[in-house]
Amino acid sequence: MTVDVSDDELVQRFPGEPITHDNAAHYRGRLRRELLLNRCGDCGRWHAPPKPVCPDCWSTRVSAQPVSGDGVIFMAIFLHRGPAAPGVDYRTPYPVVTVELDEQEGLRFTSTVVDAANEDIRIGAPVRLDWTDRAGVPMPVFALQDSAS
Amino acid sequence: MSMKDRVAIAGASTTGFVAKNLNRTQASLAAEACVDVIRKCGITREDVDGLCGSWPSAAVLQSVLGIPELTWFGNPVIPMVDHVATAAAAVHAGLCEVVLVYHAAYRAAWNSGSALKDPFRRIATPGLSDPHPGPETMAAAVGYTGWASRYMYEYGVTREDLGVVAINARSNAGRNPAAAMRAPLSMDDYLSAPMIREPLSLYDMDLAVDGADAFIVTTTERARDMALPPVLINAAVLGQVRHNEEDQTISLRQHGQQVVIETLKAKGDFWIDDVDVYFPYDGFTPITLNWIDNAGWCKPGEAGAFLREHWVAEEGRALINGRIPVNPHGGSLSEGATQASGHIREAVHQLQGVAGDRQVAGARRALITAGGFFFNAQGLTLHRT
Image (tube, helix red, strand yellow):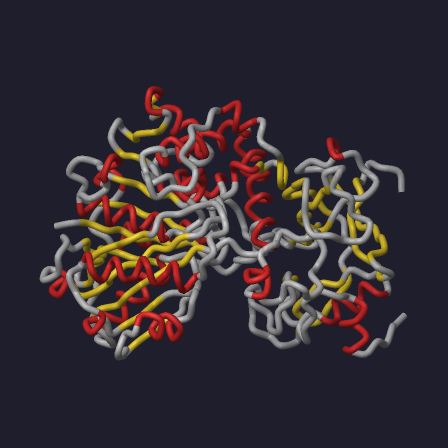
């Protein structure tokens, strides 16, 4: 399934996101609820955030490929205040986690955790990918693996 | 030929810092510190042929100060070891001979709610009305909170370990008339402060201030002809490793700080056993703990225990081995968020013997480990011969 959106429309649908030619495919992936990270077509290494060449082998055969989104919480913080965002209410401290993804050691993605009590959001907890909406566009988030799906 | 000891800081001046919006510009604050340091060094603006700072631009500040001619100027990126190292390299390369280095700390609309209410500051902050990404990021300052969570997890330490850093800074600031926050801070005060980004609270974060520092960087030879004792630049480094994004950094034991430490040890002539004052950066308390660990004062994860072990209860601060103060000016946490200009200025004052009530008797060598982890870890060793 492909979603053809112009660069103009992409920028309009993700206001404030620093979209570039190097990461546009990642944002297009979000629109179809696919979490895409860059992977080298020659050496097979994953890279985040997106880079225009493979930082390992310098191949330019780099493309955005889907990851499972399964991983383990590597860092976990709770914002008691922060930037205004639709659906975010800091009266309950808002979790932000960096997740180390199963695909490769050191490959990480940062988002929030949904449908979990803050005391259960701990470093080391296994998570899976989930999706929510932010201002009408899909946003990749994490859910605890031991929570009901 | 290495620039080791061939370039010196001839003098340092400060306006002092306040945690409120002065009705002044960054140019006004920078100019005050610059005029003072030129006078204290016993030179004139005609002697200055290099200018180096971030805000205001060198062009603006040259015009404000009426500096007739420059043969070199630079606007590097904070923190301030970058400016001192770059200016020193320019001097050593012969691009110029006397550099005026400056930093104006300024409460901006993005770091202070009251600054946001000041219309002049609001319009001086580019991009303020642009749409911003959401909160789901570890980028910029947030990253230190992420790594604080990791520090506590990996080493099994508590917020009290972070609190020791904040209390040490505040007690030191009590002796520094230039500091913005000088009232003593207790562990109860620290632990009951409002959480901002958990696990970091108000007192884990540096203090937005108005104020400025300025320095004269010149050849050691020329500095000897100026009014104050030259402080020689023994080694300087801006350390960075490949995985330098906040959420991709490999570990607390593998980031820019290790490059800084190994470089200073390899290129410099003295190390921690020989220093009289130590300046670990403290934009956030976990940075300080990680610097103390990584510099080798103690084992990884033991910095909080190390500070407690060297604590002088009646002074409310750490003195390593009973003699080495840690950020004796109060650091970014209590003097104010100077992006390390305060750390460098205090090091210069200590080595020149002009640090007032904070003076370490006979101080000859200073170690500054400035900046954070990712793309801003910096080091500087200074000494007086």
